[in-house]
Length: 557
Ligand code: G16
Image (tube, rainbow, N blue to C red; front, side):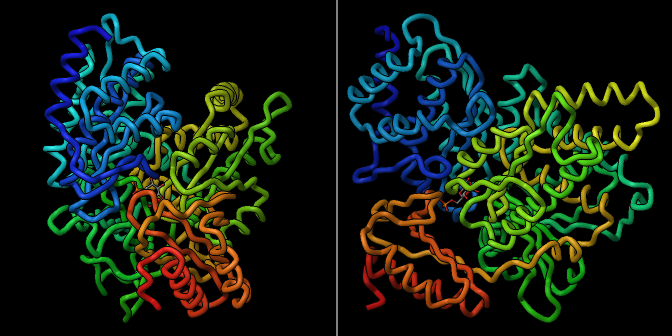
């Protein structure tokens, strides 16, 4: 690194000292903490994003959001040139860089890393980082810190995209690097056009649009509400009523995380909404769950990420079958691999259902970065977490084959059914966000498929019956003391706790339980399943007590 670069970095870093006694790490989805602690971290992640852009000679993204966390938290994560999450082999560097207080130490770290990763900092480097943020009040000052970090690497520009959803930023990064138009309007155009295309190929009997058949969407009082208002104006075939558009407190009693975990009616909804399809987004609009409101109760019927995944899988499989007549065997020269990726949180009934459909189901640890990576190994990889975070990935080779097949079918007029299936799959590949889970594209695809099938939400929910489950969080002294294995289904540290969990679980017929440290909140998460809700709740409470005894403040003694 030349002298000018050194002096820029030394000067800028001295303006962003670390808060005393704070050590953060790049967790499930980047750094997250109380916003007041994050300025120095965001500055340093700005440097990291700039280095990644220089190394890959591509556009990189930096998103300031804490998604489902409370409004006073914030966070920062990096979108790689593919539009996906930051390459995992950069995460240890993210940890050391963000915890380097002394400017000279930071300089040395960058120098060493640049040499190791062959990042050209000697000559005229070039790069661009797209910067986005959600609606949290702290987003603005943190964006300034990010800009300072990004522009501390000479030749790298920070392009401020303002307030946007996380999936929009990831989509833009991917589109820019593919040489495509990548404005917010281009995003809305792509979604609305491909949705319209899917609606065109809906079987004739199911086509009539009925305005009373609306979907009511809870925007979690975050960025999703205001952006969905823009998108919905472009959709003539769907009526969307957006609630919680940002006037209330972000994620408080609203949003996908609240609805999925608490299973009660979110703020802004009430008895007048009984009978309608309802959906909840999370704070940065990358998660989606559906629900309906129960009559005379504050409870909801939850239709979670597992059921969205099942609906998508069923539809995709049906289209492939129409195209080929045989499962997945597209023709003699092309075998399309369709795979499904879940985590340990997937309801056991969903996994059973997907396997019964004849699908290959694999598991990864929690975190979109793991699921996305696994799903990209298939021609069509569908991944979803139960919390509503997921998407469908199509391989380039499959899309190329599909385009070719569509052209062939266009020239032979008899195969209209097959051609429609090909066109549907092509439309899905454009509608569904290929960069990351996106509640908007997920919502539009669910709506299009329900219409295609002629299904009510009730019918959809009847695909299978969820096993009763419960999820709890337990505050502990040090959550990093918990080490898991086998896609987070087994605890290997602290010693003895897994045996205690097993003994507790054995008391419940068909019981299942696992614990894991959260990567976004300072808690241990406990998940249980059993044959009744009472049993799932009781097992969860017993295991939460165990966690507290092994790792906590021992409040339950
Ligand atoms: C993030 C990740 C998800 C993960 C969730 C909870 O979601 O992107 O993959 O499921 O955190 O993670 P944990 O249980 O480790 O706290 P979001 O929507 O908060 O960005």
